[in-house]
Length: 323
Ligand code: MLT
Image 1 (spheres, rainbow, N blue to C red):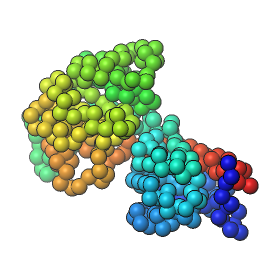
Image 2: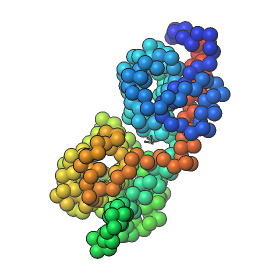
Image 3: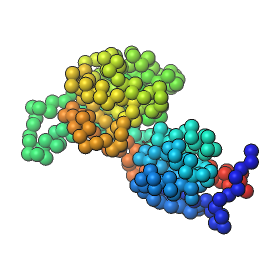
Image 4: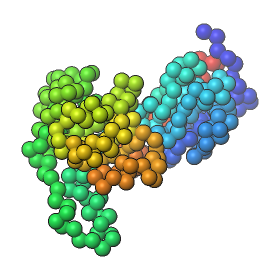
């Protein structure tokens, strides 16, 4: 197919807009072939204004790459790099329509996300964040903060991909019985780590703890809602390090208030950052962290290199196709 002539003028190097913080190791990879423009915290308007001078953009989860962004690029944007796994903040239909390649970093933060899931599971079960906050206010509440044990309990891992299976492996090490639900996972991969693959309804109805690891898609949007909370064991505890949008947040507030859900630990929210008075953020039974799943030194360095190499490779392909 005929391609538009390059709009880069005399400068033969492509320009990569890095719209959210990326480790130096990744920037170094990009600088070998591109001009790198690190502009963080752009408003949607500022992003649209800048994008027509960029051949590629790299984002994390804080930037929405909307149809408007693709339209504003006027054909120059060729690659979107998502420094992480989930690509739900990129309008994939618009990307395809504008001939733009979307690449992600699917492996480097797997362990970090799984470790944060386990951290939240344990912290929630032992009221760590609540007890810590109370103690900082001078309260020594040993009787109030009686936790629950993990050993011998059933954990349902919802989404048995890279992160889900690492969570399952670690939970087995904690002595938990683990079941998983994932319409795309192979039973032998699950059996290899001692996990039973079961239906969605079975997973949520047998679980003492539920850990969410599915991508946000039209099918998984608000899949945890009044109906699904109604099928859970009374007193279930839920961890979400996947995407806020898989939970109907109003329904979770109701389930916490009526005792069906005893506790929740949430790293992700439908809107990020959530408003300060968000009912889940303020709820006594909820432990919250600000989308820290991938935030380790090691994972951020790995993700930066992984996405920089993916974007560089895609740009090289583009450049040779347009030469
Ligand atoms: C992911 O999808 O990998 C994470 O949400 C990455 C991030 O922290 O942005």
